[in-house]
Structures are given as structure tokens and as C-alpha cells.
Length: 315
Length: 281
Image (spheres, chains in turn purple, blue):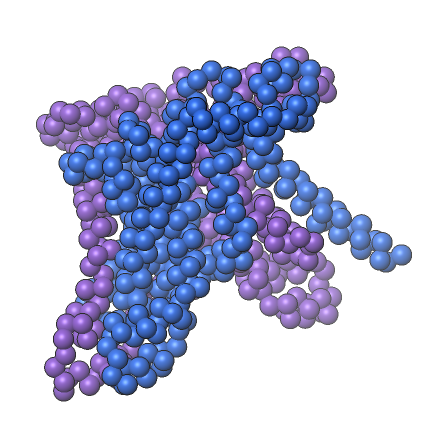
């Protein structure tokens, strides 16, 4: 992804721009004013519906606001209170486990799938469209498929296991503490694998075939060619997609909301769902804002890593 | 027999893994299809193999259309997605062009800002954003989503289009400028027509991201008649008892179909769009 670097956006002055010194031009013809003007509509939307809410969130997190009742400034009380809240500590643990377990699986499976898709297979386009499906359809809807696959009564997994004589009673996938988080992680891996596959596939297509041929002539086996030719070239794509995926998994909401709503007994809450429960369902919006903001330092670090990497890539 | 050894190797390294991937990745969709086409009595009958349809019935779909607000949700989703895409795409074209081609004060800082905006997840903003939406009296209006979706569509579209605009040779624009075209004239008459594939990618991505959005729609639209398909399905169909599995799966499937169809036609486009500059996962 060579084009993500903002500094590369700096264009050289056009010859027309230089002539601007002699001919007075309207606002629409001079680069500085035209540039700012073109940025205006989008930036305005982002300021009203993104930057302003962000700072409002910071303020709310420092108050004891409830929905419908503007609160008083209470300093860091919300943040301190949360540290003593066992459900919040569980939520924080869950969020880390959820992201740190699923991302490596998604990366490995995505890499495997990309390598398979990169070979000459029949019905290539149809298969590519098929394997992309989990990533592109509405997650809230596909999660409903998983909701039923994990149903205590109707789960076909339970049926199969019973049919094979491995279990005697149905498994309550989403109602048993450890099993519940494992189940939502399976669904998350299912949803995220195609994302890695497709980005790594794009990276694989940038690997020149001649390099492979040359290495093969020099006697390198398939495994050696993979490690010494393919991996160095797709390393950047893998790193970028991994950082992206950690951010998105960390800040997930839909899968957990649809599958467990944080249950059983708050065992599967992650930051997003717990912030929703406290901030909207329990109307403690100041408290909820603080929960959401606990995500911020981690997301900020990941974003900076990503930005620094992409800058270096292009420079 | 070198040939058969190579074939055996290929089956083991390509076709077996591919089959496993296909089963894993398509299982929930297969399951939705099967359940949505079964009568509830078959669902309850645990002697039947649940993976097969013994008695085919379209009843769940008829129920969905006649007894639920599915069609209204579909209309809402379509209106919001088209409007948010149009608004966001217009802004993205202008931003993408400015960042790709123009030198202006704060330009590169704004580029970084847009990139960072792209990484801000809705879960970080939804609580204060709900207050902003309330203050502007946008609750349960299409505008709540039409204005908030661009917060993730614009950063995404701007980066994608910025990458695309850079692939267009600057000389073409310079010629037009020398021939007396205005700056905006070259943008609309020269750059945009040449960027149509990129704009199409950005439009498809924006449309599908809007179609799939859940959190904002859940918060801003859940108490009125303007629910989107994901919100309507999850909040209205799910609270009923188990008899509802059929219509529920039918709704989940139908809500996914338009997106699936778009991607089947544009999958190559999608891959090239991802490589052109922006990814999200």
C-alpha cells in the first residue's frame, strides 16, 4: 500500500501556478485557497460528527452525567471507579484476550487461504467471491447464523457430536463461561480471515514470478522460496493488515452484541459492549464514556505505529 | 509417475485446504439457507439430519414479507446507504483531489488527520455522538445516519481516491490548464472521467459499509419506524421465541444478498481497490 503516505501528497508546483504571480487569480485558481476550499465540506462533517464528539466524550467521562441529566465535573472519579469494578476488569481482560487470540489465527488462516487462492484453481472468481462473503456481508446478520449454530437446542454441532456418539447432552455454547468466549472468538476468526486473505493475496500478486523462477533454478525448494522470496515481499502487507485488524478487533461490538450481549454473567463483555450497557442501557453516560476512552491509549499507540510504518515505507 | 505425484501433492497442498476453508467460511450461509427453507416442525424434529431439507417451504419468506416490516427496513437501508454514499463520495472526491494535487497550508497535516480519522472506531465515539445527534434533533430521522456514516466513509474514500488521482498523469491536467481551463474545470472534465474506476470502487465500498453498519443505526434509529435491516432483524425478530428461527434466517440472508451480488460482480475491482490505497478489517 504505497499510497497511504500523506507527505507524498505534496505536489510540485504546476507551471500554471508559477504564472499566478503575474496574473491575479480568483480564489478558485490559487492552490492554497482552492485546496482549503475543497477540504471544507468533508472536514466540516468530520469536525461536527467526529472531532467534536471526541472532545465531548472526554468531557463527559469527567462528569457524573446520566442520560437526560447533565452532570457535574467529578475529575477522574469514573476512571478510578472502573479500576475497582470487577466487571470492568473482566471486560478489559476479555478485550485483550479476544484481540490477541483471534488476530494470530486470522493472520495464519488468511495467509494460508491467500496462498491457496494465488494458485491456478478452477472457478477462481466464484471461489474468491465465496470466501470473501464473511467479511463483506453485514456482520450483525451473519452473526445470527452463528447465533443459531451455537443454539443450546438447535445447534447442528451438538447434533453432529451426539450423532457420532461423542456427547450425550447438547452443548450450551454461549451459556457456559469459557465456552462462550471461545465461541465468539471462532465467529470473529471466521469473519476476519477473508480480510487477511484478500490483502495478503493482493501482496502476493506483487511478487514477481521471475524471482521464484530464479530461486528455483538455483535449487531452492518450495519452502525455501516461500521464506526467502515470498515472505520478505508480503511482510509489509501482513504487518499493516495485522495492525488494522488489532484496532478493529479491539473495538469490535456487533459480534458480541448479537451473540451474547456480554453474557453469561458479563463473561464476554468487551469495551464496546460494556460501554453500551453502562452508557445507554444503564444510562450512566459519563461512566460509559470513560469505559470507551480506556480504549483510546491502545488505539492511539497502534495508530501511531501504523502511521510511522507507512511513512517509512514511502520515504 | 511424476505427473500423478505432482497431482497428489497439489491435492494435498491446494484442494484439501481449499475445501476446508470453503466449508468453514460458507457454513453459516449454508445453515441460514437450510433453516430459512424448512418448516418449524422439521426444525424441532431432532431425528432429522439438520443439515438437509426434508420438506421445502417458502413460508418463512412469505412471513417475513407479510408479517414483519422487512420491506420497510430494506427501503430505509437503501435510502440511507445511497444518500450517505453520495454525500461522502462528493466530499471524498474533493478531499482526495486536494491532497493528491494541491499544495496548501496545513495540507499534509490534514492528510494525517484524515488517515487517523479512518482509524477511529465507532465504539469510541458512539456515546457522545448520541448526544450530538440528540441536540441536533436527528433521532429517528434518516439524517442521523446520513450525516454520521460519512465519518468513516470520507476518510476511507479520500485515501482511496487520493491514490487513484495520483495515477493520472499530471501532464494531462497541465495541458488543459494551459489551454485555458480552470482548476475546477480540469477536475470535473479531465480528472474525474479518467478516475471513474476508482470512483466506482469508492462508491461500492461506501455503499456496502453503509448497508452493513450496525452500531449507529442501532442507537439512532431503534425506537422508530426507520430501522435498517440489520437493526430491525436483530431488535424486532429476535425477541420472539424459537418459532422465529426461519424468518430470522430468511431476513439475515436477504439482507446479505444485495451485498453478495455486488461483490460477485466486482470482486476483481474490490481486490484492486484494496491495493489502490485503503484497507479496513
